[in-house]
Amino acid sequence: MIRGVVEHGTVRLLDAVPSEWPEGQEIQIEPVHANKTGPRTKRGRSAEEVHRILNFQGPAPDDATIERWIDEHRMGKYGQ
Image 1: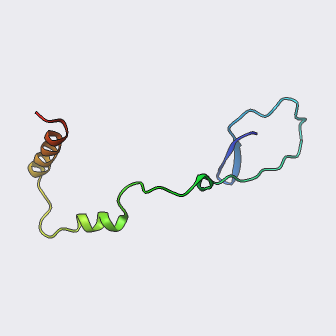
Image 2: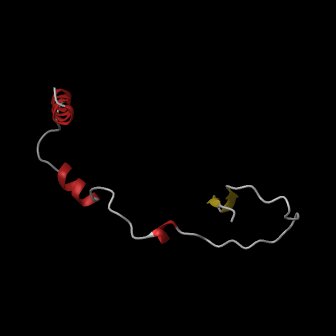
């Protein structure tokens, strides 16, 4: 099997073509879809969840507050 990817409407081969194939040899290409491997797994929060989390009222936090949040997160993760 020779693997390839479609780029701008053209198939680009990822593997070398066997040298025994004559020039002009006609080949048949069958698409393989990534989702054939099984059901998709959840990768994280949905867009709706992220929107709900970020849709807080009031002014945006200042740099000092963000830095404090990052430090608190690091303390919780790594201690010290």
